[in-house]
Length: 204
Image (cartoon, rainbow, N blue to C red; front, side, top):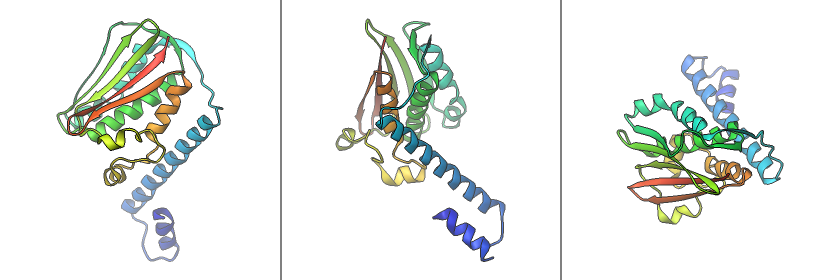
């Protein structure tokens, strides 16, 4: 609606082309493009046709590399963040692009809901039959009534906050689908005003 409104105003010469307006249209276009891509992934996943490009690689390295991509954002909010692992190498079969997508979604989500000078930590633990990745933050937490719906498509626990940050309500749904496509599962624990922990389990 924003894009159409601006373009029609241009056509009718009601407004002039200004950099600020162009930036707004560009931002809305990127948001729309992300929404379409998210819907495409969900559609493919729901139809069981999501193809994974899996190969054996070091999961610890992928997690650390993805985490480092957010260093600037951590610094901007003075957030303390680290990755810990009980092993330097955990070699399993996975799609590195999709694992990065899972982690990026969860880290981005944690950044939105964690205040300045907060904490976002990732831990990796290896077990006999599975690997566990925990993404923890000491942010605003999730209300108990919202926890069971948090992975539902288009569900937003805080509508006003998600609108202001450009959320589509699809990020966690996509995370769940991608984790399950790897034969794993994801769970969430949260206490309102104390923090949230997402726990991903992947099979060895």
